[in-house]
Amino acid sequence: MVTVEEVWKAQKAEGPAKIMAIGTATLANCVDQSTYPDFYFRITNNEHKAELKEKFKRMHVEHLRSSASRWMR
Image (tube, rainbow, N blue to C red; front, side, top):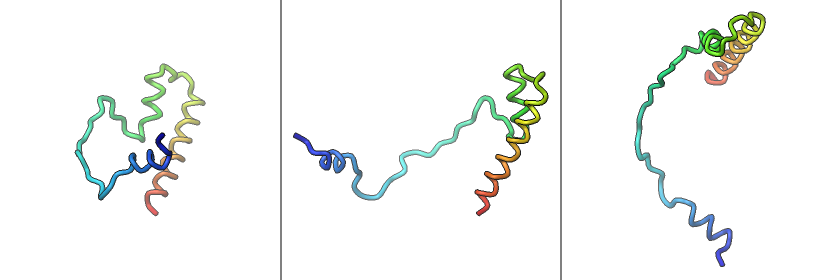
């Protein structure tokens, strides 16, 4: 019978890690983050929900600011 430790040892790599491939991907629908709220409400047919759209925009801006501050540290 195989022990848990033997399974763990078999799953671990030995030696340094290697990069197998580097590539890029281009998305068919690339949307600038500053215009994302407008894009989202347009594709979901919810442009008539102005209050919700404005709230979503505020939340999105706050998220972008907090993300940017984390990256700047």
